[in-house]
Image (cartoon, rainbow, N blue to C red; front, side, top):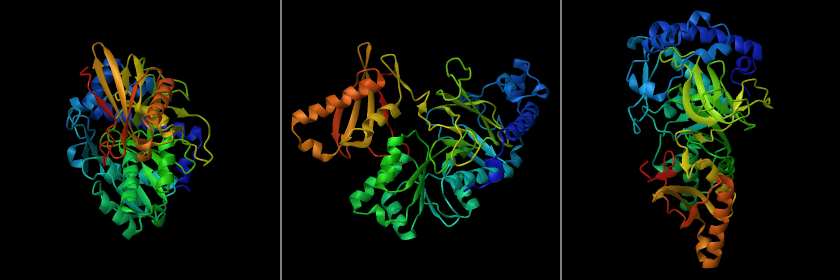
Length: 432
């Protein structure tokens, strides 16, 4: 099923022509209306009028999160504040918050693109969608809400938290689609088991999960425990929010809404493009944003272009699931380590639960990493010898995957703190 078949199945030639026209318009608009970009263009001696092909994109400046922070709150807006009808912002927990502005047309575009993502994931107008993302300045809740209403579905704006009520609402309102982070979906599944709620008795049939990296193994766990069709979707507040990309029901990569976003994959060290199929940092340029256009935004998210065509028939290029972030990446003993690598190993080992935590410390001049792994209760009724064997098995698997040795400690189920939002996987105590 398609929301806008003519746009989702456009020929590459027509799509690239449309992208070029929209890129030219965006560059001209920011050159006139955004002093930050006007200054950058002058420094690079870049004339927007000379942009003649998509290859000229590499002549444009990168934009970073620090640039957004430096121009807080309205310094990068391309329209007067009177034309902004919505403001969203990041939490600011890791530094100065970033602020994003939307015109009335931006809101319409946003709603339409989220409806496109929902439709690709199998959601229909007769679905009942429970949105367990937080509402407020965070873009996830309102983005999915408006897209679901644009689709014509019934929306339950329950927001995040209050897990028992979430489950009660699923039962009473006959929720068919769940929207939240994948870690919270697992938390809901665990809570159902504790409450004696049979997920097979619910009306749930599809889940749209995003907001944090997750693995194929976690998808399988979600589909087994709830059970549902679990799909991934991607967005970030600095670009628009949800609706940038999403999986279709074939679940073979996230289709990028390329008529609105121009994507690149670069080497985060050299800043040069990498070939299709290779992992690198995702860079996004907005093509239709009026209030807050962004050129070559470095997302810090790691992914790759999937060059093969998708069986669904969409011609929009796909990116793989986000595997991690360049700034969430741990460097342990000189080796790059991503939580998703550890998660993939643990999901493949019988007896482990889908909850873990990575604790990194420094002993003298050396790094030490300890992985706390929740295991099923039965493990603790085994002999100490069997427990040690399991620890050694996990350590060997992780050493093979990561290329470094780590310590492993088994902990009982429900020992690690649960999260109703993004799971806190890493505790770095090195004070680097």
